[in-house]
Image (cartoon, each protein chain N blue to C red):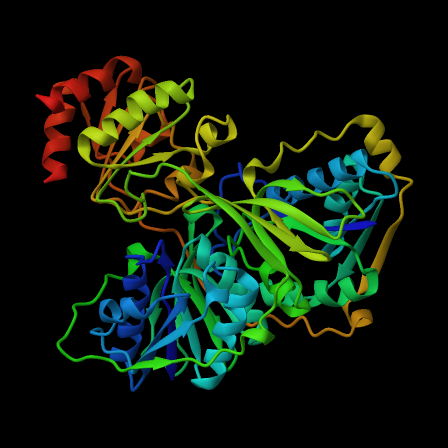
Length: 322
Length: 249
């Protein structure tokens, strides 16, 4: 069995979550005589080879072309499918993210492969590997078999630690791309990055997240943003604030947003709907502030403070600063 | 101009889940079912396009058993023009859904397929992208704004990504998947329900489309995830800060 890890690159940098996909591959390889390749896609990705070349891959494949400068799903999926065929790949894997959600199912269709999203466990010792994934907003863990010669997976980064690097180096192998044959039905126009300057919540050690108790964007920025900056943390949000237009969807933690697993998750005025909890319950420590003593968030919080966030948060910020 | 909106029947997300005693599946006895909320957002968007332009037909399609007629009627009640039920015997997975929809697309030749980004039961988030891949059509996933006037050869979409908002243009026909903030679906009015009863609802067997909908995925068992142990209530901000500093390390 040969696995193909699709690395994720954002702003010229390798996303840390790629390490989880490599961790998954290493776990599968440890269970049998399997090998894996890592694929770097983009316009100028050769410089990233050293960051993935010490994990034991058979090859680091470089698919570089100006036409791949933006992660357009039709082109990326075409190249991934092409590489999977050339490398005789049986399992294509990437870390779960909006990038992989966009691109990998399309590649799966091109490969006539079944797919599992958000895999959190694998038993690769059996003849046919068996996978575990969450469904129904994280309320159910399913053990699933996936039939077919080629399989496609996204793996949850909190479930597979990045392996240690070794001194060995994987060879870098360029991929030949027929640029003229790439689809051109999607045209990139622009990107607006939200919350630039703060860490990405999927990669941060601390996440401060705000919910319905925050009345407007200014209060959110002052209280949740202020507390996050004091702690050097990323900012997150419940769906209620996204719905209300107070925060960007890029901040949404939950079933249909981001799934985070930081060392510390601080829920500020979040009631704790199951859809939200699905996105943060793997945090090592959860602290919650809510004025409703019956808020469901307190059932998952390690430390709960019953208080009005408008009173408590400025005190916490001031206390942390001194 | 035609917009095709696939609708999935899912358990109401607010209903607590119970597993069957043998853990082979979820106990849905007495559960309430709804249109998958993201599909409802997709349908709402299709209806808004229709309301802004002349000569737009909105067709809803569901793949499943007779049960899904309830959600198709609800879609007609919201304002879709006609509905199609494609009957399958076994619940399909994402790839099977995409194959059935791809065959149905060839029959219908819509200008746009607008569907939810994910179903809130299996949380796979795959079917739209797979459909676009099978048909080699452009896709714009997780859209929070659609700028398209029927007749124009391309649609401009704002997409919600991890990094923020991305704007792309897709050549039509294309597959678009709806994110949360695209709109707020309307409630079905009583006149809407009455009107829906007279709208056409066609039924097809999957064999009529010449597709094998056998799923590749098989659920072997379901389990409840381990519960987090209950924590402690702290009395003061000072106590909380002490714990935060300890957790920060």
